[in-house]
Image 1 (cartoon, rainbow, N blue to C red):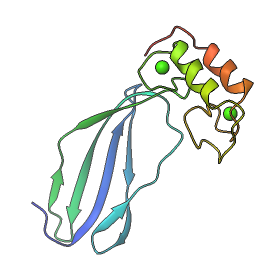
Image 2: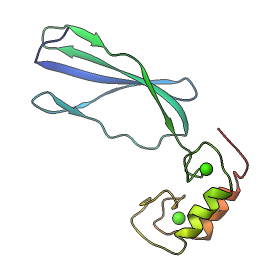
Image 3: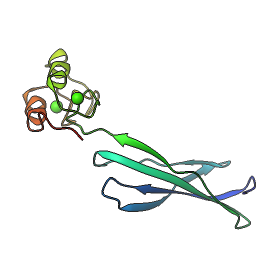
Length: 127
Ligand SMILES: [Ca+2]
Ligand SMILES: [Ca+2]
């Protein structure tokens, strides 16, 4: 059990290739911690938190998992099918911030032929 003065919070993240990373969260103030991560591969990730207080007491949370969909799986159903193309075609020629919607597969802000080509490179695949 830890007390109210949390000293450190670490995220242990197990990547789809079974590699584990250990990252300290940023202490914002008043026991609020945050972490901003990006650049992940797709697949199933598992994670748990490691928390320690000023007295050295430690707690490890239960392990949880989540699925990070591949960029080219626009509909996030684990498969690359005609539905992913239809989703892109519904927003074709629209612009926004980089990666503003999943249909912007290459995260360049525009929904165009490049996004369709990326999806076609993985057509029929599932993960
Ligand atoms: Ca899909
Ligand atoms: Ca794009």
